[in-house]
Length: 102
Image (tube, rainbow, N blue to C red; front, top):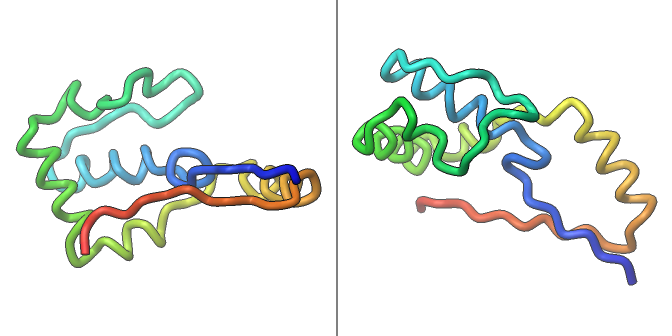
């Protein structure tokens, strides 16, 4: 049996741009748009935002707006084609993800 395991945010859905938009909306901090070359590190937001600002953004994501943030993540342009192809090539697809908050 061929099994594909796949994360959702940052793989199928564009987490980084939506996450960066929260910093723009809350603190007027602008990050570059995501490309294949950016971001280059895991905690990229710490380049321009303070720990307190990062914590505040995560409190918003984890709080009342949690489901809205996650549900409104846009897919990557090729996500649908990727999943369609994966469905044809794999016997089972498991989406691995975690949600913080309540």
